[in-house]
Length: 172
Length: 401
Image (cartoon, each protein chain N blue to C red):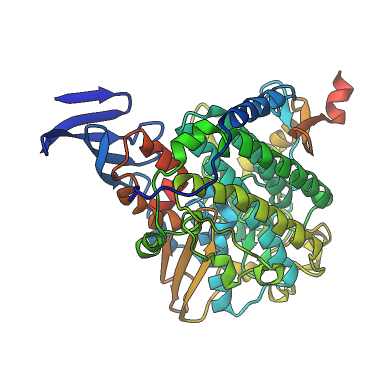
């Protein structure tokens, strides 16, 4: 293979070179669509699937979340002094599919907008029910006191534009 | 004599017609090899034989799916191609729906089509960007990956996740169209159509790219058919075939026409991908215009939801019933297919009436396209090899699965 030449119409070499360079130059005059990450964070849309938050008091211990979890990130535990079995959460295994939130019959589970946490050890990532409930409260507070957030909006000219949300305006 | 290059290792393997034949190992750590190794046999600078060594990212997806309940398999199989997550799971969901005798509502079918096409655009942009960087065209790489972000943003608005959406589930979809999606998409469409003209200038009609890609790796029509090539690589050789023509999801209602190329060389494969982005944009626009009203989930799964959590339906979310985990299908065999960004994917699902699949066979498009590596570069120079690789849009995790 490879002997036959195609009969594609030839292009004007000089014009094509100038077109290519001018297309790149035109783009250079426009602002970049980069999010300056450590200083600013993206404001995720409503319903963004971040970490799963757990409400201990609403939970009825039906274990459906542990059954549907595709990564086995949620497991059921026995809590001393509690008749019901309760779900525990392994952050390291979670794939953020959100099926557990969809199947929870009492809204004990919910999404958060946070999806990054740093751990220096493996063990704290695997939480039992009480740890998970306490951790959820901490994550909720982290959501509130987060860094300035920028909302991505599609722009006809440059693609994505990061708009300043009220959160940032208030601080500045 | 050993030759050592960054990420490559070569040594002499013998003589052929007076020339020394060199065996050159590219990958699996080479930046342009993907998760695989290429063993090239070179006579001087001419490639005489290629041995693609795949299997570096094999994750036993087929066997693992036999150990999981039907709904848990969805998130597993979308890890074959996370850049194309809706297209890769849709035929599996449809296969299980056929075994369950559940039909998704029309609105769910349209929403699936919309996400599939958003995924296809993102997948093509990913392929074009990598095709660009294989030719050292960093501008195309940066542009395509930047514009892909626009479509990831749209998918994020619709599903709540940028890549692994887990959007289509048995009986419907998990989210309704969010407010403001139509306006955002209209802007994205106008932007992308403008960008495609710039892509033509900087990439497709760029004399440097033409010099690298034109008449390189020609796949003739009859060869494309007999080798079983699929997707844009097949259509670039002039074959009128697209799995979307078989009519799944909402495609029969949308009057879909595939893009067919003529020449079958590397440049034509790039051209087909660029034009398919236009077609996908039109398809989404038409689907949004004709989007029917109604529920997004089959009534069989929504009637048993307790009234306490029914407020989610008003917000455009769904709640799954408790029996959803241990769904029992009837015994039987189903074959489904769909068109992914890389080509046609086929699922063969065998059920023996249990809560888990008895066997799930997956034939992915990249697994079918890998044979092209052994055929197309023969007779070309080593320099043409990355050009051919880039034009094939090969995705190793999908081939190995």
